Amino acid sequence: MKTLTLAEAASAVGGRLVGDGSFTGVYTDSRKPVRGGLFIALEGERFDGHDFMKNAYSDGAAAVLCRKECETQLPVIYVDDTKQALLSLAAYYRKQADIPVVGLTGSVGKTTTKEMTALVLSQKYRTIKTQGNLNNDIGMPMTLFTIEEDTQAAVIEMGMNHKGEISVLTAVSEPDVAIITNIGVSHIENLGSRENILAAKLEILEGMKKGSPVIINGDNDLLSGMKNDDYDIIMFGIDNENCRVRAVDIQMNELSTVCNVLFDGKKYPMTIPVAGIHNVYDALSAFAAGVVMGVSPEASAKAIADYVPAGMRQKTVEKNGIRFIEDCYNASPDSVKAGINTLAGFSAGRKLAVLGDMLELGDYAERAHRDCGAYAAEKNVDILFAYGKDSAFTADEAKKNGLSEVYHFTDAEQLADTLFSVLKKDDAVLFKASRGMKLENIINNIYDRMK
Image (cartoon, rainbow, N blue to C red; front, top):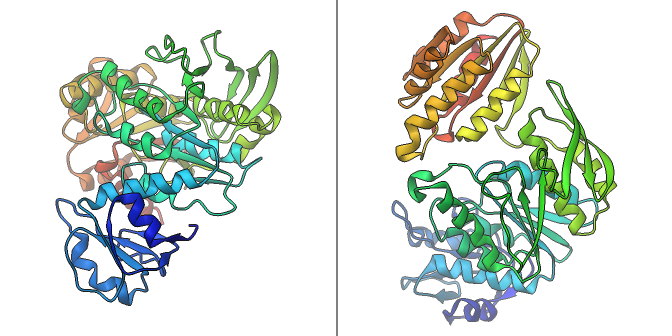
């Protein structure tokens, strides 16, 4: 982070400054102190950063920002709302950085798109990106604070659970380019309908200048008809021939996908080092972001070959002749079906799917889980292991649609026992569920038994 004076920060957040000085970082977690940084005492339902301010001095902080009166040897900025102060300070800091920002949102594929987009932009710019899933009103400001003197571009992921959240994030980050990966049913429990989800995602436009590029999925039913004369709408896709950026000549194997990107009448070869058609969409949006920001089409397509899946996203591991597809970072109906498609593309003796609950679907939960069960049967999954309360609907629908070997569990240890007992060489196994189901514990349980 570039150095800021406390006077600048106090002015930016509308706070009262006691003392003087400067700082070279921002932190909100006292367990991760930034020496010479500004400690912001956030308040939540189960924590209060003010309780840890006493550690700031010994940890080497330069100053603290807080709401409550405190005794400290450090300079203090007093504000009425520390979270709002964090956002205001990040907005001020972003304005000082004369760099292009790509903001992206969508129901699924955000993190993969973020990683690919950063790879593409890195062909021309020194690029920073959102780390992990820090895409909310705390994590996103912290990403902006990682902009350094030599930073030339930023890729900022924006997540949301409710209406109005992206409106806040885009006002702070002021994107120069926007990507909307798709509109699915994630968080439909809070928003009520896909149309409301679309409206919430489109809040990203509020922080953008008129005429800015907006890159959208032209194969998505709700996005394909989007018209807005205030922005430069660029569609990417596979099936929609009206897309300016389009994948053609697609060939997939178990570990990668190759295709040509058709752009402005020319073809550019692209290799995506992961399987699955959903990854093609993510790569196309990253390609589009690259070309609108001045990266050559050739370099934009070539960069995708260096993509490495982040976290627990579609990582393929082979043990004892069995291939495991670890894709348990998160789940929605669209991403579960995408995972099943990837499994279906494997050449394996048997194809096994471990599908856990998809969370935050509200009244849509039963229908969504049943759809995934029917899809598993349609794609000829050999054995289905359904895990969780709502996944009982997945199991039931799979049976109704002709999948003969189906198990349902609510106990992780029992699932692991049964799965391990049926595994044999040349199997391929998909693990897919919402993050809260912690499928990685079951995966590690299986791996431990295979040592």
